Amino acid sequence: MIGKKMLKNKVLALSSPGGHWVQLCRLIPAFKASDVVYACTYNKASELSDDDGYYVIGDISRDSIHRFFSVTAGIVKILKKEKPTVIITTGALPGLITIFLGRLFGIKTIWLDSIANSEKISMSGVIASYLAHNCFTQWESLAGERIKFIGRVI
Image (tube, rainbow, N blue to C red):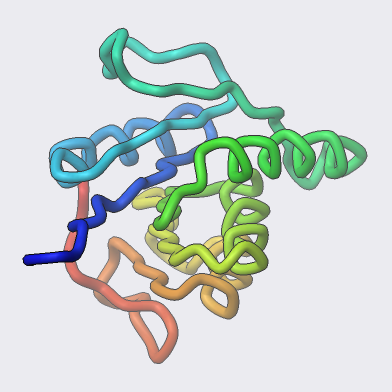
């Protein structure tokens, strides 16, 4: 493009630990053309290089909802500092909070429901289907009007 700067997407890739993180890491090759920063509820994982930007976020679940404000404040700090153009999350509640905040900040959002949810979409996934710009399931039988199936990451 002559006279215009090509803008590179800045991606915030965020998840809860365990299987959510494993699934997010399976997407790393898809991010190679973007500037990516990662966030999870535990210390930097071995899947990432020393050069990868990484944030530890507060953990929260239905059983620890009292942490809502502190977790939300931490995510807002990341969004303000990093200014991502896209948020992608594999869940769970920290990802849902980030999707909501991303919408408030005008950021494109993607929710990928966990492959572990093979019989029904997770509660967070159902809520995300109303909030996220794009919402995906990894099970074809669970796809619908707001939640699409385009394949599995595992």
